[in-house]
Image 1: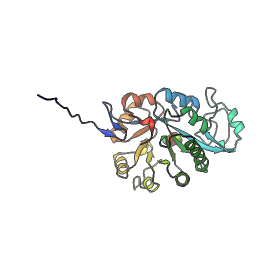
Image 2: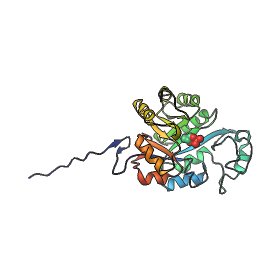
Image 3: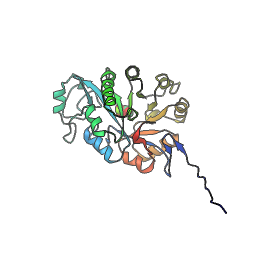
Image 4: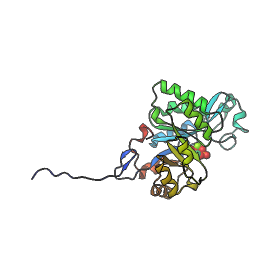
Length: 260
Ligand code: G3P
Ligand code: MG
């Protein structure tokens, strides 16, 4: 009798064949904000240490610099006060952003990550697309892999501007509510992905997005029961402050090599 060949059927995801674990992409939220002060280099390093293949940071353009920060005011996460955008870069750098960390620049975050993970840059506020596009163009010219970057925003006009300035960049369309026509807005933006809130996502939304060829990345999903719920809904990935919870239960494939 000749050799016997066994054919094993495995589910195929965007990242190739999943092994035993089901697939759910882990995107470290503001680095690994469940473990370290959000949007700091410590948080980025923690996400890398925990093995997050992707991570997200929030970016404002202030005093001619791209600073990594979430709120429009300083009080919640620093020892400063007032509106972020009213301040000089010198003042912002003098603040404690938690555990002695400084507010980082986007270029510092990119340097720490290097080729260890993918980065989602969320544009906060107006006029961020242009300086982010300039930085990305410089990084790409220096040999940084384009497929490791995804630019998202709730400000969809900023995404239109980003598409104009860096046509090859992948875009993620953020949304807080649930539109009557599903993810049409994201398809119209020629986005790669749509990013709904966990409060406003259901099977209908996920299926509609997939029919439009969009990935679905949901924010913010920290509880194991919610992770399971998202995986059952068929979402492609989650933003989480606890990367280890996702990685422990869900396959990541070669996700760190590019959004795909
Ligand atoms: O990009 C996903 C998520 O970060 C969007 O909401 O408010 O946490 O920036 P927010
Ligand atoms: Mg964000």
